[in-house]
Image (cartoon, rainbow, N blue to C red; front, side, top):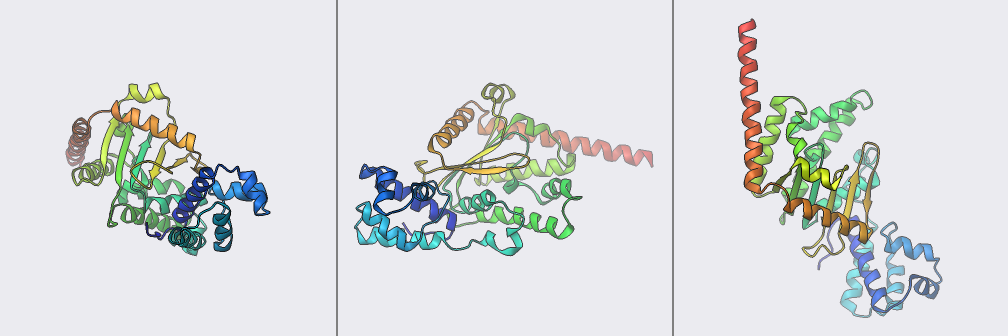
Length: 303
């Protein structure tokens, strides 16, 4: 497999390969760390994806782990080099207002093969129209200056290109709580446009789209939106991204990631079919367009 461009993805591939090699040799983290005269915490941070590892340390580690195939060693050393580079999102223009998990998310979005996205409140940022994104960002208008707001909008719209306009676009599965249909964020015109764009993305096969009925999501009690990103079809080495009002996090823990995949897949199978989902969204668009026409006629009569 060729080394890809994203440092966060390279670090992820490397940590998985190192952990797998250690487990094949049936060595504990403590045994490996002691062999290299490292602290245990250093190896734990490397395998946990928290720290990058230098090419020199990678070679030493691979030797201890019995990885001797020259092609494999060269690939993993190249991954180590790539992992220590800066990404597009480390540019000073973006760095000051993107959290570490957010920057890593953007990198994984640009290379993920499968993305499972569940949202309980909004249409995800990467799929938002410009008008909806501007309206939502406007919430922060008193805290952020005009230039930063514009940069945040640019970032949100650029993400869409990175995800859907790359040579191998992902299998993007979007699952929305039914309540998202009825939150007219930005008002009826902006939201009707947003829903129409979602339908367009579904019809163009950019996304698979499902609406989860109220009663189904209530049973699972999933309060926070989440995204699971998989670098291959097998879900091996997948990551979990979660966000709330003040914080976001990128989770590598296998058990937590697997649990969220399980929850998503159960919700998916119990949701409205693709055809039913498109009908529900289409009905809501028609309702909003009729409402706008009524309001326009009423305004004309009031003049």
